[in-house]
Length: 257
Image (cartoon, rainbow, N blue to C red; front, side, top):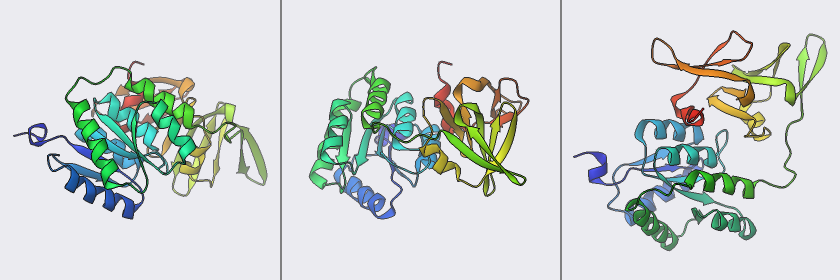
């Protein structure tokens, strides 16, 4: 008997340990017919679980460090799954979830509301997946994005005894290396101490994609993505000789390219 015959595979991604434990306990009680229930501590771990397990349902914290719930949701939907977001947003922002036609649970999660979400998900799983789920996730992201949200415009990097100001429009690649981040432009590179996950929060997700736990690239600079002789995915940038690894968890970004 496979996992689907035992029941749907359910994934929970929540970076706060107490809330994750509480949701797992409530799910086990409220959905005895579920199959495997997988717990993930952050977005990167969740993307890896999506690639390995293709969960039928994912309960996702909308805000997680590094890779957020919306990016994980895109991978889940691409794999044919359903998504329920968990959120601490206020009442005004909740309207975005309702308008985006995706289900959500307001934190702290109430058992009665969880039971309602499970029933909706079970009904959805009994039907073919709607063809516009990706569009709904995109719409939700647009509605949740703060007006005038602060985006990085400049990166200041120490080069010898001087400070180099790098315009974000010139950046092709950001790569974590030990305690530093390597910033690559068309005419050079520098290193900074700002953690990659902090930089991600200030980058336009339509312009920069995370393709590996430690690598973010400018989408327009991508030349090709291919498998090497070992079956690993690699990425190359236009005009550069570098061969960069791509995690299987992020391959959903390249569907249709």
